[in-house]
Amino acid sequence: MFKVLLIEDDASLFTEIKDRLSQWSYLVYGIQDFSQVMKEFADIQPDLVIIDIQLPKFDGFHWCRMIRSHSNVPIIFLSSRDHPTDMVMSMQLGADDFVQKPFHFDVLIAKIQAILRRVYNYSAVQNNLKTWCGAAVDFEKNTVANENGSIELTKNEIYILKLLTERKNQIVSRDEIISSLWDDKRFISDNTLTVNVNRLRKKLDEIGLGAWIETKVGQGYMAIEEDASRV
Image (cartoon, rainbow, N blue to C red):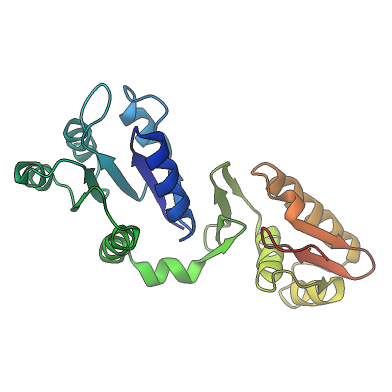
């Protein structure tokens, strides 16, 4: 899951773009203080920036220049202005693409995907990532991240989460989990499984996901997919 910083002061447009990109499993962040764009950029560390030209305080060209002085992160400009010099200026400042408003969202998505595919090792990233309840689960880094933050899991915890999310909305028996972990020489007891699941759920609570791991008494555990019917 890639992080997108959307620098757009039009609240309705920001919400619409965020909703559309979220459907494609992108984590979209906005700017809270348009005089502190670089501080928020540093805090978020996005994989891609989408920036409007007309902004409060300083225009998009200014912030593009500032971002480029610190990072090579891909940048897409949005603009309602149709003067060719805007496009030329954005390219000269190091932007990767330019999208004129109004635009079709399919076009924006296609441009985003093309840029990410070119800039990042897309296939390698996808092999290590799984999307669950709007969060990115990274099985290589042992992390789970969403718009509420990021948590780091132990090897045991990420292994349990992997087993459960591979079969979302299905019960995975305690015996099956223990057997898998036993083969991997990590567990030997039923009580140890309970302790580790509780620790996993407590960490997931930090980013609002603890409730999506359900205990099925006498059966096992289930990773619920967001908005799915609970059984």
